Structure formats: structure tokens, C-alpha cells
Length: 258
Image 1 (cartoon, rainbow, N blue to C red):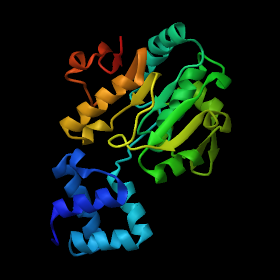
Image 2: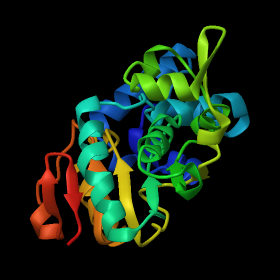
Image 3: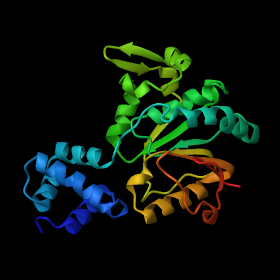
């Protein structure tokens, strides 16, 4: 049992509601083994005992396996397309009160980017982003609104000067942007999905999932979208069977529900 990965997966599911069967095994096992060896713990059974008794170890584990790599305006050319085409079309179709979901939002870079992108087209009072993530630690970090210079490098210069203030080595995003985002814990593989959304953004997260888990999530997103709604995915991802699910492909990273 000491090095039984099946045992670890079962215990992690019971402890955290995170189903490791839905993640690529070789990749995830390597990450967990690295973490265990860092603490010089001998085997999965002793590590599970530690997760049950040590809150710091438990929080570190959840934060480590829910991979959080994020930045503002990641892949700027895709955000340019969002600004010039997708947002204007959605406003024309649905009006000024768009329902927007930033799924697996990590440290808040993405939902705050969405508020800024929408602010070019709408008054801030009309903007409301529903942002979710599995990891409560990254949600807590998102609510602080402090970011490194590197993470905001792709923010358009006018928005950067308007909405960020330098605080020591970090940059603080404006309260008026933060106020437009509602954060909530949500497990994409387990929890119920919200419905009737005009725009869903989930980028560079599903690459860590198995093909079966990916397809399940893409199908659930389809059901979550209103007719005419758009799903925006990452540059490292693609929906191979998008036609079979029902999507229309607007371009490489934007998929629409007819």
C-alpha cells in the first residue's frame, strides 16, 4: 500500500472531492511524487495520514495539484479578437447585461481581464463576472488583487495605467474592477453547472484532463450556454468533435452554440 497510487486516488477523492482519475496519470503522479519526496515522506499511506492530520500539508497539496498558471490577457491576439468581434456581437445579440462565466479562474487574472475587456464596450455597472475555481487558496489570492509585473505584461497600456497601481514590487488592481467579479468554489468534474450563459471562458486548464473528462466538460459547457452563446478556450486546446457536440467553430479558440 505504501506506493499504491490507486489507494492514493481513492483517499484523495474522499478527502478533497478531486477525482485524480480524470487527470493524465503519468503527469499527475510525477507531480505528487515530487511533492512527497520534498517532505521526505515514505509512501502514499504515510502521506495520506499527513493530509488528514496536517492542514498546512493538506492546503499545500490541493494548491499544488490544481495547476495554477495564469496571466492577464494571455495570448493577446485572441483577446483582440474578443474585443473587436466577439463582445460587440454578444452585446448586439443579448444586450448590455451579459452573463459571463470564468471557469477555473485561478488567481483572478482571467475574470479581471474580462471586466477590463468588457469595460471598453459597457459601463462597469453593467458588468458582472461569475468566476469559479476548485482551489479556495487561489480564490483568496484573487480577492487580494495583487499581481507581479510579469503577470500583467500583456494588459493593454491604457487599461494598465487606468486600473493598476504599483505597490512595492507588486501591482494592485483597482477596487472598481474587483467589485465586478463574484468568486465561488466549483469542481468542474463534480458540481452542477450554471445555465444560460452568453460567454464562458475556460482556458489552458483542460489540457491536464483525460480525453474522456475533457469531452464531458465541453458537453456540459454546451448545455450551460444560451443559444448564440460563445465558449472561449485556450491556445493549447481544441474541441476535436465540436460538431458532434453541437458547437459551431467561429475560429480556432471560439466556439458558438447555435
